Image (cartoon, rainbow, N blue to C red; front, side, top):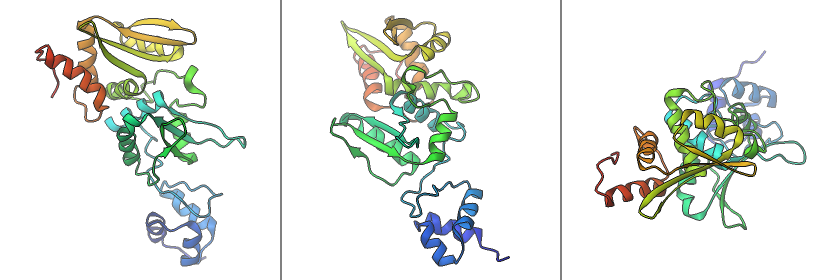
Length: 260
């Protein structure tokens, strides 16, 4: 039986060659190419003989860095997994024009080569059709039609030492901070299935029920400062415009609590 060079075939794929081109170049079968790439942790849709995108599709296999935890939180807030009529699932996340630079950061984090898509609603979307990527997110609790069934992450999904980064990502997606009558206010929208466990971890939030969605709020200044420190202490990634609201407010008040 002929032996094929696994390293060369993997290198071909990463350089941008399609599976069809690799088969022709290396004189091997499609099954051989798939088997070799799978051993390297690279999943290729067998329906897509010409591979269109190569990126870090295994990046959410395990949440073990601040960046992974943050982006998982952001996905939990703003991402979704739609299902086609055929039953095939894909990943989509969209933001308003004012946050396009932040979505570009996420695209770069994934190493995803395709550009963002502008839709008729004026929002920009990153759309990924990759079952390995989708299934890993599902294993982390990002299910189809998650808006009413999202649950707070378990320690197995997001280790406790990375939870603050997940919360910051979620806050950047579904939270708001604003000034009213010379005071800061914070609110976060979430599914009831998420909010109960959230409030167990952050008992200074007050829960307001609005239909099928809960609104979690903080009004007291000392608790807002506490949450600000929790969010941004030892952080490397955040949504600039939200952090700026906190820090501009504290600068105007002459506060020394700002985290450098």
